[in-house]
Length: 105
Length: 337
Image 1 (cartoon, chains in turn green, purple):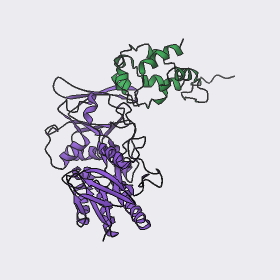
Image 2 (image 1 turned 180 degrees about the horizontal axis):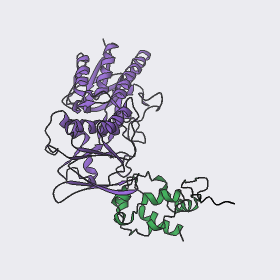
Image 3 (image 1 turned 90 degrees about the vertical axis):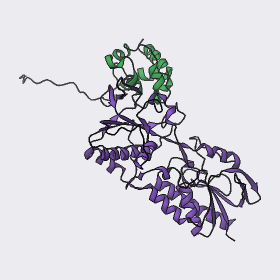
Image 4 (image 1 turned 60 degrees about the vertical axis):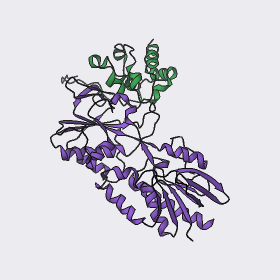
């Protein structure tokens, strides 16, 4: 076959039909209040690790539901607890982070 | 002799209901704890969607109810159940026998100082939506700089906030923020204005036009992220932190003025009235209507009706429409009684 020099790019679409949600579901079983995040971004705004790493618990939760590997973000968490203080929905973010580490065991 | 109807609360809902009841041939008696009628609207400057004068609305309603009995600086002491009606005792010693009571006790603005991380009452240039309206109306405010270069609005202060005890959306603040952002740009054309929002809820008549206008003509910047904390720089400027959630990055910004959009809670005095009249409180903290579809103006008690923000956040036209509806409900109730 003639090689025209074209390659196919990988799709950048989040294919929700194929996304593996099992890790998110395991997380929700361990920390049910993961479900009430409304993506306001308060956690990421006030996160002490965010300016250097891009860490945002909001992004972690959303990324997990969209099939992304969120471990690089999680690695920068120092469990300082500032996100707990600012979350308007009162999510226990510390428990969420600790549960996330179990999800990736 | 004309039948009495006691109206608890002399805001715009109570005033509008009094007007309708006068026209229907009743004797409405307004009980208002402030020294003037009009409630929150009397302290507002201009009203969306047509930027009409709040003072004109209150004045017009006031003129229409000149024949009503109005007790200012008065509260309800207690409500006694009689056969087929109530005896309402007021703090001025007057007691009124009546078959119908309209509760129009309205709302209370969330106390912004409770969200300490926003620095209301701590930093010099943090004000609320109500403070800004008062300033628009001519009241001096030393917290507002003479020529601010950057101004921020924080939506949802004490609304959609489980931690602050109010999970509800106050629904009028998004539109108020857009209106006030435009009004500030009119006065300070060189300032950059930023609205920090979680969701923009611009649901009402012509609200979306304001949004487009704010973007197009006034170049208001809308940033999707809730401000998490406010600090002060060494040179006395405010510094806010938010996540720009659409970009996915933390964001910081220096401001000369920050406006907090305080949300609406049920007036705590409504709880006292609810105890006296054995009314129910709904799960959102507002008074509970008989049903939340077709019976919003009715309570579970015979002869006790609701109008306005005592049953939930309302816009001005919603409060006025509900007052007219409640007046008709009362009329039908008294005819059948």
